[in-house]
Amino acid sequence: MTDHLAATRSSYDNVAGAYHELVKDRMAGNPLERAMLVAFAELTGDPIVDVGCGGGRTTGFLKAAGCDVSGIDLSPKMVELARANHPGILFEVGSMADLDYRDGALGGLLAWYSISHIPQDELPAVFKEFRRVLRPGGRVLIGTHFGADETLQPRKAYGVAVSYTAYLYRPEVIVGALAEAGLTLTAQLTEPGIRPDRGYAAFFAQKADPA
Image (tube, rainbow, N blue to C red):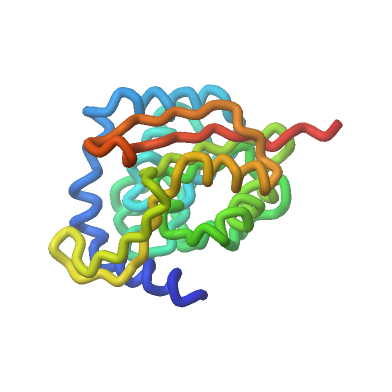
């Protein structure tokens, strides 16, 4: 495990409970988020894996929408929370950079606010790993904060000491990395935040069927 992954894992172990309490009910007040996840559920074949699933809120949403879904997270503490919150769903410790699935095993992959700790030069490799585990026609939905290619290194979050690095990429950086990985962008949504150069973005992409 690389140093930045180890730091991210340790930090989310430390903040797992506080982070989950902060975000667990956020979807109720965010109709755009719900709409994107509903569209993903309707468009995507099973099985689906939620990578960076945290406490399982989006995994549980997809399960309730009728999907055959499981979740992985780098943080063992987050996985413990997800298992407690959603006992009918399989959750395992794992890294999106090295997915433990055979080639073409999945119909879909969700990375919902979980790629922000991946350095820019590693994004294409991570997206290639997404592509590897998808069957032809399989779909990816990525949600993330965007910014002006900023690097953030907080030392405290949710009242707890942390040591991770987060990246706020321009949306075109994500689009370019998806293309480099061989995934075709099919839809994109950006929602400005308080600052015009920061906000929220979602990207739907697909692995092409063979010619």
